[in-house]
Image (cartoon, rainbow, N blue to C red):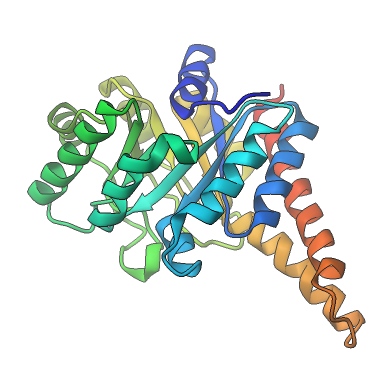
Length: 283
């Protein structure tokens, strides 16, 4: 199957009044496990590489992203590649300039750490540049809790401010703060579903939920019913991945071949993606 475009996958979710799942990639095993899980569930999805993941790989975006492109292009279901939580302006401009050769069809501009007017100006600049190369551009308003410990989980996106922000920036999707938090290892977050519904009614663009690993599946289903159209998942994959590595190394202290413990780690990612995709999106 050929590489999908994020904008098309989100548009399909909007038409179906459903959602598309987007999964964070740190290593090639993540990407492979995610696609195996999507294939098992028979559903499309998005491979996301964050600025933090790029920094982990020495600031070199191309190798990991190109690997994601090849994994996505060979998938048996539609899969796209997305650059997530990009705060560095130079990296964002590099994404815009090199996106299509790398297989990237979308970008999340994360300027929520700036004051409101600077967020608007930065996001508008990058959205316009992205649109010139047909990228789907997401942004964030109302900082999502948990990101680098910098934002309080109690922050909420105001519908009127969000409507003005979308109109002034021209973004294609908006990540909203409705009660979720990044890096949660237990699914205990409570979402403001009434706020999700009000935002969905007020805004002309699809809503994105970050920090979804910390949200119980029934609440995620309710959030999709209320208007969430892209659901981001990262920590849940890492919990499963790391548990398998830890268990294997604890059982065999003499192992030196990383394939021995990375294979079960990749399978754990597959299982998390399959289970979550099936539980959330299959009725």
